[in-house]
Length: 72
Image 1 (cartoon, rainbow, N blue to C red):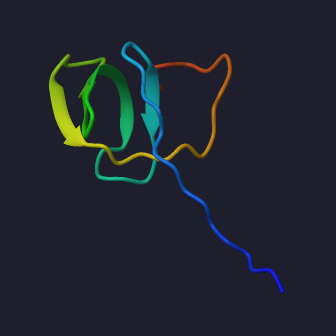
Image 2 (image 1 turned 120 degrees about the vertical axis):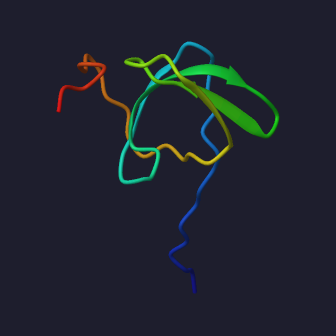
């Protein structure tokens, strides 16, 4: 008898990548500024401030030809 299993894997960020985080305290549009073994540094496209966080994202969707940064 098999089970339904949810499988998660860390997202493989790349420097320069444009990302959008939904439903999180880090929600919004970001550019990946740096990637380490355990951390990712994200840059705000509006203020250009950078924040380094422990790796935390998992991919749920990928949009093609999308507006970025997203207008509210």
